[in-house]
Length: 260
Ligand code: ZN
Image 1 (spheres, protein in one colour):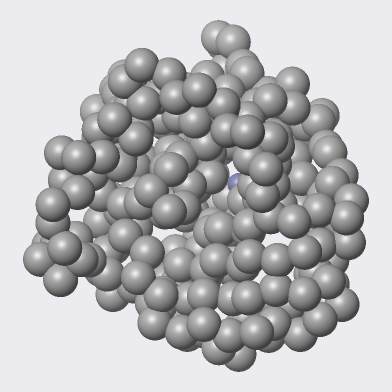
Image 2 (cartoon, helix red, strand yellow):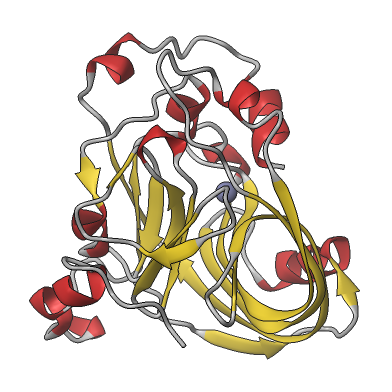
């Protein structure tokens, strides 16, 4: 059922670090991020960091790809690329990213979620069981009446700002679907560095599609959460990043428009 793993895929780089038990891993409990949300807003869509590198800092997370070629969602040690043509495939270790957020997911709580719940109700529940002022990795496995997603489309130079790139983004609805929502709750003070509040990506259980989750209605599901106490950001060194203008104070509105 699953697609063949391409040469150099993440599954193949896994044995390099796999012998570390979670307790021995110095990065346990750490949120690891490459670049900034405000850099994406500024059109910094090319990073030097490979997913092979990212994979050494986590087995769970979300992100995008160079030239904004789709959405990344990862859990259970496998990362997937969800592209605007509707395709989904395992990420190869040599693929590069301008923005990704990962952690080693070690759930401290598992809870049954309220059934027949819309996004608003679900996020209200999640807010109650997580800390507003810490980062939390969030995973929901369940059956959904509907999940509405978007998938960013590959961009070409000169890169437009993110609000333009996402203005006409292709949206897709998955109905009566099983799958996983994976992502993070981030504190309000992190807005700009990341996305404050909830940022979740979806992958169908059959791994054949998904995207950035815009809206959803859960029939029934299980929530797992993992609170994080360290935050590590790798800053880019590219000309695009060094020349980007970060003094535009409207980034809060821009993030809400492009990531809402
Ligand atoms: Zn997203």
